[in-house]
Amino acid sequence: MKIFSGIQPSGVVHIGNYLGAMKNWAKIQTPDNECIYCVVDYHAITVDYPKDEMPRRIIDCAKDIIAAGVDPEKSTIFLQSDIKEHTELAWLLNTITNMGELNRMTQYKEKAEKHAFRQGEKVGLFDYPVLMAADILIYKAEGVPVGEDQVQHVELTRDLARRFNSKFGETFPEPKPLLTEAKRVMSLSGEGKMSKSEGPNTYIALTDDAETIRKKISSATTDDGKTAEISPATMNLIGLMGEFGGKDIANQYLEQRKAGTIKYSEFKPALTEAIIKELEPFQKKRAEISDDDIKRIFKQGVEKLQPLASQTIKEVKEKMGLKI
Picture 1 (tube, rainbow, N blue to C red):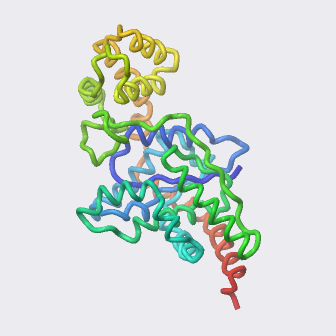
Picture 2: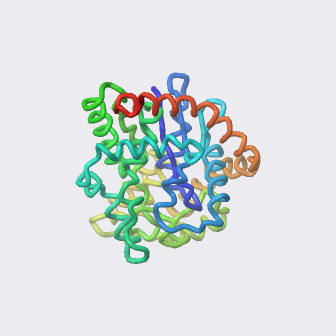
């Protein structure tokens, strides 16, 4: 299967990104899969961002991808803006996309609500699902590893592929969402999805040192351990134990919580050490990757993918009657 996925270079990468995307990217690198992974910098500029920090963010994001286990010898890694056909295909797909479809996008509504009061709603923020569709379809990908919050965007991509094929002739496969096993990771505050915008104490960065992780888990929100209803914040931490410490250990703590016997003074340190243990090799590997390594990997990615992107655009324009 040909697989495509991307991640935004929006600053610090946290364990929600790691569990929801990067860890799974490494897992599906098999001889049967052709994996293409992208640092989607054009998506990162749909909201206000610090211009001077973006080059550093792009490099660091690629380092995170590789340190998480994605092997540049097995997968293709590249920078979105290095291949202009992404935006060209997005414009062509815009001509068959309905406004109502984009208005229904849940993530657009969430992001617009969060950012609009500061900067006004941007066309790029509204339209970025079409660019995401172009990212996928330009390489005729068949599978897209995503978390549950991105399934709606993959469904739009499938709709656009089907619509284009019906209108202009068979061109694109209809890509399937490949759901990650990890559930949506919540903020350590217990409110909403884990996000950098909510403050450093609400997320665990992949680059946090052991002492920082201990402090953050120690102050993470839980319920009182006694009520019949288990709070989402507590379930989130037990879920993290399942990801970092193993399902069996997580189930033991879940049963303790159901029985009202859980001791958070024991559970939180156990979760902390499980996270630290998994992040240690990641941090060690990341420190060994140079900026020049990333630039070389990006260059190799473009050299491999540019002919594919160019061929797809040529085919699309011919079928749309834009070649004379």
